[in-house]
Amino acid sequence: MAQPLNRRNFLEHGVLAGCAATLTALSTPAHADLARPTANTRHGRVRGYRQDDICVFKGVRYGADTGPRRFQAPLPPVSWGGVRDAIDYGPASPQRRGDANQSEDCLFLNVWTPGLRDNRRRAVMVYLHGGAYNSGSGSSPLYDGARLARRGDVVVVTLNHRLNALGYGYLARLGGEAFADSGNVGQLDLILALEWVRDNITEFGGDPGRVMVFGQSGGGAKIATLMAMPAARGLFHSAATMSGQQVTASGPLNATRRAEALLQALGLTRAAVEKMRTIPVPSLINAMATTDPVLGDGSLYFGPVLDERNLPRHPFYPDAASQGLSIPMILGNTRDETRGFVGSDRSVYTLTWEEVAARLPGQLRIDVDPDHVVQAYRRQFPHMSPSDVYFAAGTAGRSWRAQVIEAEERARAGAPAYVYQLNFSSPVDGGILGAHHTLDIPLVFNTLDVEGSRTGSGPDAVAASNAISEAFIALAKSGNPNCSALATWSPYTLPTRETMIIDAQCHMENNPRRWEREFFARIPYIQPGS
Image (cartoon, rainbow, N blue to C red; front, top):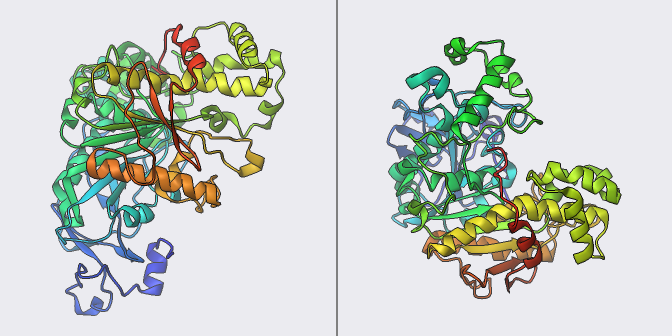
């Protein structure tokens, strides 16, 4: 497969071909030999490149520079003349780690499509990246959309948006109306990107009436939040979340405590909140490392805020937001989520029973006696090692718990989700990582062999990838994930709790991990960070 190009090697190698019957040659005679796919967006023309039989457009601007409007709602881009190159990913939102290319001018998206202006009206799959709400971008090799676009004859979109305090720093109670949107501008960026898809995707061979959003971890949480935001209504028609849930948003008082901690770390008083608009980005990013005043440890958490303006209710509390009930939905988690969070620390594989109880609170983040949790697991699963209990309880009590709540609330409302549990295990390092957090990303995108993938490319990985990617494509196309690659996938109902087990050989199970679900259901759930 041809590798994605950057500006330098594109110009060095001079790609001459374009997507069949859809390429638009440049009008400038000096560049007429560089026939490349050109698309007309509502704000100007963009010129991409061809990756085998897929047209690729990277770094397409969907919003104006957010730097001059820090903490404010985004604006559409200013229209441009001529043709802009779209062969490099746009900058990521400023963050403490991740892409080297970072800027407040980060509202860019990427498109992979089998054809332009061909009236095929393909389903559109828009991916929202993970990294909680603090880090990440749409440019990871794991998210390269070429294989998924080719496999399903669909249009794939990834994107960047504002993160951390720049996207979710709630200053409204400190700065008034000028900061009214500040706690959710990252979500408003996503809505602007979906409006761009609605208004432009037909040019890229897509159907604005069949838009699916899918995302892993923080990306899934962003989707759950969008389903409770009135401004997002009608912008997507199906959804899939992968190890990412948002039962409750941050409360405005806790979000204000975090804003105050950020101001203090910057040496600013509440009266000086206006200076937050112009303080240098590196100073702002460094200040986010201050201890979170709500959680009591770790760096500052930022996420969607119940601001009664853009987000008028919690996404899945006290029930599922009615706005999302008409949207067909996949809800997925991996069997061994916690191994993805801490599995690189080899000391966790040799824990003693005393050490498990000491370390569990940091994973569970709920008010429960960790000694009681360990004793209960030892009675129920006498074959488990201390490390096995640590991973299992950390997954069932925190990561999986929110997915169960969301599935239950949709089932109670008569809008069940299609639920999956990933059991396929990574073969890396002898399989010690199991079915860890993030493992389903390359399976869905068919990017098994790219940098960062831990799936391997053996027959079991290929089989699991075929099954889950075909199911996602089917949901995007029809609103139902059932397809020839899977046995019949029944929606989640109560009390049956139908769940698709994704592995080399997929199958349905009713009420998997029942004991663990019932054990933790006795304890009030607290959304991490909220």
